[in-house]
Amino acid sequence: MSTFPWKTAPAGAAIVALAGYAFAAQLAPGGGSPMQPHGQMHAQMHGGMDPHAAMNGHAFGPQFGANAMPTMPGQEAFGTIQEIVRLLEADPSTNWSKVDIAALREHLVDMNEVTLRAHAKERMLDNGIEITVTGTGRTLPAIKRMVPAHVRELAVLGWNTRTEELPDGVKLTVLANGAVGLARLKGLGFMGIMVQGAHHQIHHLMMAKGEMAVH
Image (cartoon, rainbow, N blue to C red; front, top):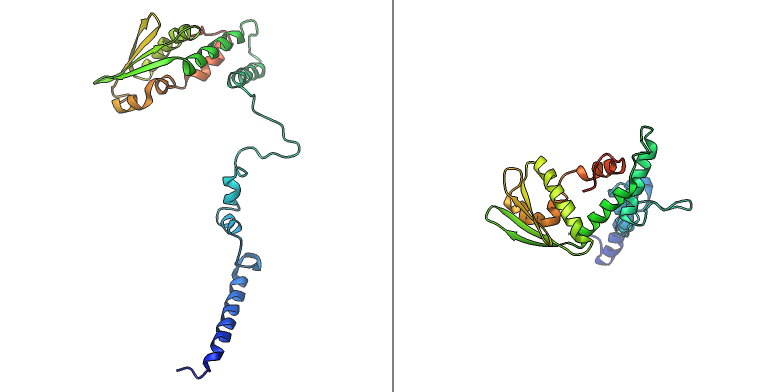
Protein backbone atom coordinates (compact mmCIF):
# COMPACT_ATOMS: atom_id res chain seq x y z
CA MET A 1 0.00 0.00 0.00
CA SER A 2 1.23 3.53 -0.80
CA THR A 3 2.69 5.54 2.07
CA PHE A 4 1.49 8.87 0.57
CA PRO A 5 -1.55 10.44 2.19
CA TRP A 6 -4.63 10.21 -0.02
CA LYS A 7 -4.88 14.00 -0.25
CA THR A 8 -1.59 14.16 -2.16
CA ALA A 9 -2.87 11.83 -4.94
CA PRO A 10 -4.55 14.55 -7.09
CA ALA A 11 -1.41 16.66 -6.98
CA GLY A 12 0.71 13.70 -8.01
CA ALA A 13 -1.62 12.89 -10.89
CA ALA A 14 -1.41 16.49 -12.09
CA ILE A 15 2.39 16.38 -12.07
CA VAL A 16 2.37 13.14 -14.09
CA ALA A 17 -0.09 14.63 -16.59
CA LEU A 18 2.03 17.77 -17.07
CA ALA A 19 5.16 15.71 -17.55
CA GLY A 20 3.41 13.56 -20.16
CA TYR A 21 2.18 16.66 -22.01
CA ALA A 22 5.70 18.15 -22.07
CA PHE A 23 7.14 14.87 -23.40
CA ALA A 24 4.48 14.70 -26.17
CA ALA A 25 5.23 18.30 -27.09
CA GLN A 26 8.87 17.42 -27.63
CA LEU A 27 7.85 14.58 -29.98
CA ALA A 28 5.44 16.75 -31.97
CA PRO A 29 6.74 18.06 -35.39
CA GLY A 30 8.66 21.30 -34.82
CA GLY A 31 8.31 20.93 -31.09
CA GLY A 32 4.81 22.35 -31.27
CA SER A 33 1.80 21.43 -29.22
CA PRO A 34 0.36 17.97 -29.89
CA MET A 35 -3.10 19.40 -29.28
CA GLN A 36 -3.48 20.63 -32.85
CA PRO A 37 -6.76 21.80 -34.36
CA HIS A 38 -8.59 18.99 -36.10
CA GLY A 39 -8.07 20.40 -39.60
CA GLN A 40 -4.33 20.92 -39.11
CA MET A 41 -3.89 17.38 -37.82
CA HIS A 42 -5.62 15.94 -40.89
CA ALA A 43 -3.69 18.30 -43.12
CA GLN A 44 -0.43 16.78 -41.92
CA MET A 45 -1.79 13.26 -42.34
CA HIS A 46 -2.94 13.97 -45.93
CA GLY A 47 0.06 15.74 -47.38
CA GLY A 48 -0.72 19.21 -46.07
CA MET A 49 -4.29 19.36 -47.37
CA ASP A 50 -6.95 20.53 -44.97
CA PRO A 51 -9.95 18.28 -45.68
CA HIS A 52 -12.34 21.06 -44.71
CA ALA A 53 -10.82 23.28 -47.39
CA ALA A 54 -11.11 20.40 -49.86
CA MET A 55 -14.77 19.88 -49.00
CA ASN A 56 -15.42 23.57 -49.55
CA GLY A 57 -13.90 23.36 -53.03
CA HIS A 58 -10.70 25.25 -52.28
CA ALA A 59 -8.30 22.38 -52.93
CA PHE A 60 -9.54 21.38 -56.38
CA GLY A 61 -9.94 23.11 -59.73
CA PRO A 62 -8.29 26.37 -60.81
CA GLN A 63 -6.62 28.42 -58.10
CA PHE A 64 -7.83 31.98 -58.54
CA GLY A 65 -5.47 34.85 -57.79
CA ALA A 66 -5.37 38.57 -58.42
CA ASN A 67 -4.23 38.09 -62.04
CA ALA A 68 -6.37 35.03 -62.88
CA MET A 69 -8.36 35.08 -66.10
CA PRO A 70 -11.56 33.14 -66.93
CA THR A 71 -11.12 29.97 -69.01
CA MET A 72 -14.65 28.66 -69.58
CA PRO A 73 -16.13 29.64 -72.98
CA GLY A 74 -19.65 29.92 -71.57
CA GLN A 75 -21.35 27.52 -73.98
CA GLU A 76 -20.35 24.00 -74.98
CA ALA A 77 -20.79 24.29 -78.75
CA PHE A 78 -19.00 27.65 -78.72
CA GLY A 79 -16.10 26.05 -76.85
CA THR A 80 -15.95 23.12 -79.28
CA ILE A 81 -15.77 25.44 -82.28
CA GLN A 82 -13.18 27.59 -80.53
CA GLU A 83 -10.99 24.54 -79.91
CA ILE A 84 -11.26 23.39 -83.54
CA VAL A 85 -10.43 26.87 -84.86
CA ARG A 86 -7.34 27.05 -82.67
CA LEU A 87 -6.20 23.64 -83.95
CA LEU A 88 -6.67 24.78 -87.54
CA GLU A 89 -4.80 28.02 -86.92
CA ALA A 90 -1.92 26.15 -85.26
CA ASP A 91 -1.59 23.76 -88.22
CA PRO A 92 0.45 25.32 -91.06
CA SER A 93 -0.96 22.72 -93.49
CA THR A 94 -4.56 23.89 -93.04
CA ASN A 95 -6.21 24.52 -96.39
CA TRP A 96 -8.37 27.52 -95.56
CA SER A 97 -10.10 27.36 -98.94
CA LYS A 98 -11.76 24.09 -97.76
CA VAL A 99 -12.43 24.98 -94.11
CA ASP A 100 -16.15 24.91 -93.27
CA ILE A 101 -16.88 25.96 -89.71
CA ALA A 102 -20.55 26.46 -90.60
CA ALA A 103 -20.86 22.73 -91.34
CA LEU A 104 -19.42 21.90 -87.93
CA ARG A 105 -21.88 24.29 -86.31
CA GLU A 106 -24.80 22.56 -88.04
CA HIS A 107 -23.57 19.21 -86.79
CA LEU A 108 -23.34 20.53 -83.23
CA VAL A 109 -26.93 21.75 -83.55
CA ASP A 110 -27.89 18.21 -84.62
CA MET A 111 -26.12 16.78 -81.57
CA ASN A 112 -27.97 19.19 -79.30
CA GLU A 113 -31.34 18.29 -80.83
CA VAL A 114 -30.80 14.52 -80.55
CA THR A 115 -29.35 14.71 -77.05
CA LEU A 116 -31.88 17.07 -75.48
CA ARG A 117 -35.04 17.06 -77.59
CA ALA A 118 -35.45 13.67 -79.25
CA HIS A 119 -37.92 11.26 -77.64
CA ALA A 120 -36.54 7.74 -77.20
CA LYS A 121 -38.88 4.86 -76.38
CA GLU A 122 -36.90 1.79 -75.37
CA ARG A 123 -38.16 -1.79 -75.49
CA MET A 124 -36.06 -4.71 -74.30
CA LEU A 125 -36.00 -7.79 -76.54
CA ASP A 126 -35.00 -11.32 -75.58
CA ASN A 127 -31.66 -10.73 -77.28
CA GLY A 128 -31.26 -6.97 -77.48
CA ILE A 129 -32.93 -3.57 -77.34
CA GLU A 130 -35.24 -1.73 -79.73
CA ILE A 131 -35.36 2.06 -79.50
CA THR A 132 -37.86 4.21 -81.34
CA VAL A 133 -36.37 7.70 -81.66
CA THR A 134 -38.80 10.41 -82.73
CA GLY A 135 -39.00 14.16 -82.90
CA THR A 136 -40.53 17.15 -84.64
CA GLY A 137 -39.30 20.34 -86.27
CA ARG A 138 -35.51 20.72 -86.35
CA THR A 139 -35.12 17.57 -84.22
CA LEU A 140 -36.50 15.20 -86.87
CA PRO A 141 -33.84 15.72 -89.56
CA ALA A 142 -31.17 15.65 -86.87
CA ILE A 143 -32.36 12.18 -85.80
CA LYS A 144 -32.38 10.92 -89.38
CA ARG A 145 -28.86 12.18 -89.96
CA MET A 146 -27.20 11.13 -86.72
CA VAL A 147 -28.67 7.78 -85.73
CA PRO A 148 -28.03 5.86 -89.00
CA ALA A 149 -24.55 7.39 -89.23
CA HIS A 150 -23.75 6.27 -85.71
CA VAL A 151 -24.82 2.71 -86.52
CA ARG A 152 -22.00 2.55 -89.06
CA GLU A 153 -19.54 3.51 -86.33
CA LEU A 154 -20.97 0.88 -83.98
CA ALA A 155 -20.40 -1.77 -86.64
CA VAL A 156 -16.69 -0.91 -86.53
CA LEU A 157 -16.78 -1.72 -82.80
CA GLY A 158 -18.32 -5.13 -83.54
CA TRP A 159 -21.87 -4.24 -82.47
CA ASN A 160 -24.84 -5.87 -84.22
CA THR A 161 -27.07 -2.91 -85.06
CA ARG A 162 -29.56 -1.80 -87.65
CA THR A 163 -31.93 1.11 -88.27
CA GLU A 164 -35.33 1.48 -89.86
CA GLU A 165 -36.53 4.88 -91.03
CA LEU A 166 -39.93 5.99 -89.70
CA PRO A 167 -42.09 8.93 -90.81
CA ASP A 168 -41.33 10.73 -87.54
CA GLY A 169 -37.88 9.35 -86.74
CA VAL A 170 -35.76 6.21 -86.73
CA LYS A 171 -36.05 2.79 -85.10
CA LEU A 172 -32.71 1.61 -83.75
CA THR A 173 -32.18 -2.06 -82.92
CA VAL A 174 -29.07 -3.35 -81.16
CA LEU A 175 -28.62 -7.07 -80.55
CA ALA A 176 -26.44 -8.48 -77.78
CA ASN A 177 -23.30 -10.30 -78.86
CA GLY A 178 -19.72 -10.83 -77.78
CA ALA A 179 -19.01 -7.10 -78.03
CA VAL A 180 -21.89 -5.99 -75.82
CA GLY A 181 -24.13 -7.94 -73.45
CA LEU A 182 -27.84 -7.65 -72.85
CA ALA A 183 -27.50 -6.18 -69.34
CA ARG A 184 -25.10 -3.53 -70.65
CA LEU A 185 -27.50 -2.57 -73.44
CA LYS A 186 -30.29 -2.15 -70.89
CA GLY A 187 -28.11 0.01 -68.70
CA LEU A 188 -26.82 2.17 -71.55
CA GLY A 189 -30.14 2.95 -73.21
CA PHE A 190 -30.34 5.33 -76.16
CA MET A 191 -27.82 8.00 -75.20
CA GLY A 192 -25.39 5.51 -73.70
CA ILE A 193 -25.35 3.76 -77.07
CA MET A 194 -25.03 7.03 -78.98
CA VAL A 195 -21.88 8.09 -77.14
CA GLN A 196 -20.01 4.85 -77.87
CA GLY A 197 -16.69 5.16 -79.67
CA ALA A 198 -14.08 7.91 -79.81
CA HIS A 199 -14.84 9.11 -83.32
CA HIS A 200 -16.81 12.26 -82.51
CA GLN A 201 -13.83 14.52 -81.83
CA ILE A 202 -11.84 13.58 -84.93
CA HIS A 203 -15.01 13.82 -87.03
CA HIS A 204 -15.51 17.39 -85.82
CA LEU A 205 -12.03 18.31 -86.99
CA MET A 206 -12.56 16.59 -90.35
CA MET A 207 -15.87 18.39 -90.85
CA ALA A 208 -14.27 21.73 -90.11
CA LYS A 209 -11.48 20.95 -92.59
CA GLY A 210 -14.08 20.16 -95.25
CA GLU A 211 -12.87 16.56 -95.45
CA MET A 212 -16.07 14.88 -94.29
CA ALA A 213 -19.77 15.34 -94.99
CA VAL A 214 -21.98 16.43 -92.10
CA HIS A 215 -24.03 13.58 -90.62
